[in-house]
Image (spheres, rainbow, N blue to C red):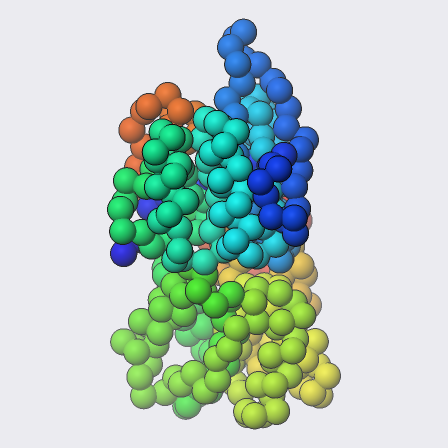
Length: 334
């Protein structure tokens, strides 16, 4: 079983692919730049989708970094469908790109297409998310965050939030999970539960947990259902800011005050999340940095040149409490 961040943070590609599934969004704006008179490195990148502000910032970072590096970029938006990503990767193999990078929709089901890439001697780098594979040689590296640690950090910062709020006694927690089967959803839940079981087995309880698919609409819909079945929830732990922001709408519609009646901890650190936190509606945010483009391009070049790279290249991130939001907001780049 593959560790989440054992892959290379993948570069952005523009799939001008005739073999791509018709429903996948393709971008053929690859720049045919050259460097030192040599042919530009060609990078095929399949993005998971555009489900959140975090993902949009991640896509922009990859595209901008590829342009700066002078790479020819082939990019495809999988619209959160694994079959679209597999089609895009097969298209990149057919086109003979130099490196393939992708952020996988889900953890499993990649062995066949990755073996096809290996057979053509095209190195594969993972970005942001990990996969599980029977053969670790099918990928080179992963560039991205430690999702399990993000879950742990969320639990630890919740301790501070509860203390600041003066909450004592039992804590009833609702959890908005990310996309079912996706690495961040699996691992953030795992890390949070590790701390909860180790340090709060007697007082914390997750009373309801369901996927909101990393979207605001999903967060709003699922949180409304949570409040119907569990109106006495104390805390919401949302696997990303967008679901948390959607949940805030449902909490307010139910006549409750987000950040007070229900304490909220989210993951990502997008600008809209910081705005909500500065308004007192989110209590703490665990950062997951989407600006992986420059780091990814460095790795892609090393991989193309046959250099050895670490199996997991982690990103630097921080945690923020509500009283830090206003000062931090002007510095948010996404």
